Length: 188
Image (cartoon, rainbow, N blue to C red; front, side, top):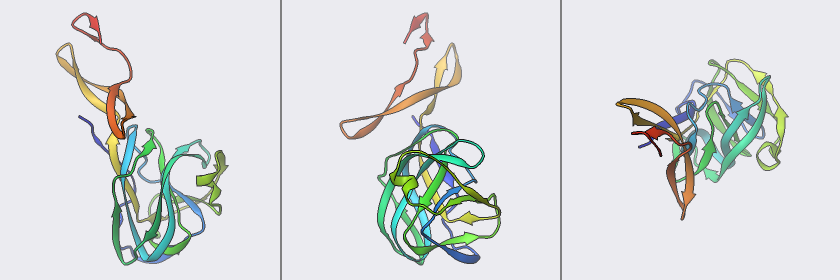
């Protein structure tokens, strides 16, 4: 059994003027709760968009981020929420949702936790840690959900939350224990 994880802000029609692309943006709001895999992305573009990169970013502090994993979506229809499923984007607890799109505009509010922004695509295509400029009071309609790598295990009559790992076996994600635990006097 796994648990649902999420990151980013709900993909809704928002009040402020939509934001254009050509910048990598990392949302400060709603980081990933538990390590796992982001399997669905929801976006609300006001106008049709292209070349959407969306993924998990490791927070290095002081608005410095390293892209961990991402998915690419070639075309996004504008005017309504679009949902992209069947994705496999690795995320660790504390990661934040980042995105880049070449054309089109994304719905936003001029309120909320803010975003860190950088005018480069290579944050997705070039490894490394990059510094971002923080913009307060911004919320974008970009959201992700997935499954966690944390699950309850009954140990000695009580339930404990135990870390697990997700591994890909023959094209399917499987949950395995990441450490041995003692059950009934034996290490499992």
